[in-house]
Image 1 (cartoon, rainbow, N blue to C red):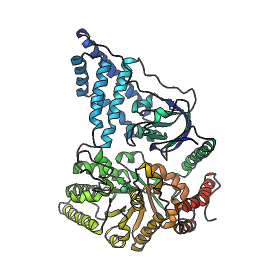
Image 2: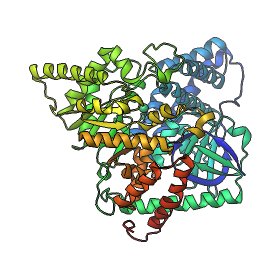
Image 3: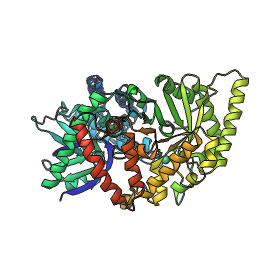
Image 4: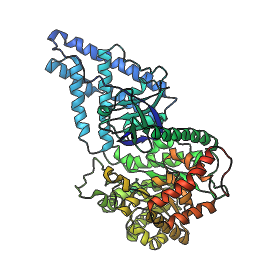
Length: 589
Ligand code: PEP
Ligand code: MG
């Protein structure tokens, strides 16, 4: 059995290849005392290094512009801005002058001071910007110490990049033809390295602290970018299993290219709306919207988290308009600010809480700070006349919370009308079903909303009393629990009885093993990370509605999670394999 290392799944896909260790140059640098008459020479070296790094970053940006999305290529602009920042330049020069240290040492000190400031920030997105500073420091030192940073060539062999972290400039040093995966000891899901890996389509896992101590260059490993797991020195059985999955992944990719723009229908013609979950306008730029029915979940909090202060109404209007206009008439479902819990806002003081996920988060927080809610709703309304916007409320617990939001919307629309500001009068309001008690009161809530969207990530954690981010109990976090499926069935039935649409926007919507069950239970709209849309579409086209319903009935009657998984293994997996083998339209059999 292989040794398993668990990290954060940063970019999906499977890779099997030997690990190759990469090291940073910033730790091993020459040190000397700078005499008075050499200070100007050090400053000249700095100017030379900045020019060299600048040139190489612009070259890399140019080289990658075809492979990366418009937004992601701007990661290098952020680096160029640091490089040419006047305060940074002055601080490095001062360090040389005041302490008589050589430029390499001065750079190391200034960068680590800056890093300390970023690392102490509460906002995780800002904390990850420390990596950009490290990268700049490393490139500058590299330019000073070596004439040229050496480009890695793998001599035609596949490899997994392993390092403390994957930094934007690394993309320029790699043998991109043979890199199969990226695994790092540090970094988060939203670090620039992780964004680049996703954009370049390279499976990646970040945050495996013990990575560099437990692996050696050359040892074979399996990287499972969907599960966030690296298997070291896998057994023959594990290898065979993953090689099968890798083949499957490749045939899925091929099949996907064929089916991408086909309609999302079961073989007997039931349409299922497949929507995308996005975290910002930039995600929309890289979307193939033609393959989807719209945006089922726009997590607006990420735009708030990336900033140093609340965005103004005008800034929000501009952002929501870009999203709505970019969606070409398809719906864009803006979820109102869902901070608190695991998503702090650096510039907004939140109290220390013993149980933050049961605390002041989502709509609860916004209702206590009406200014935040008013501004956001007004901005969404003002953007709504440019296309099809919808509003979705997170972490709703009671009907009265929804009624309060409706009242706010009524006041805002009356105000917009009286001042002649255009908005879409038919804008829909929906609630996320995440808090279990809402299922019980859904018949009372449905009359005051237009749609519901089930946030299974939170709903499952609350139903099973299992923290969704706690590795120790991760095994118990299993949405195949028959109790979860029965709750989903109640939601689908209650919504259908009220004539309101119900979608799922938690991770299970993008898990293709769930697809036939969710359709059988009654869901006709699934919203997921865009990378999963093609797989779900392939699955959808493999089972007739009758078959889905029959499978769901059986699963709902089961008494254990294991029994549901067995059903998936015996009934769903073989059909999937058959569909991928290209044996024509399955279903109806
Ligand atoms: C959910 O809880 O399922 C959901 C979609 O919201 P988030 O993952 O952003 O909490
Ligand atoms: Mg949630």
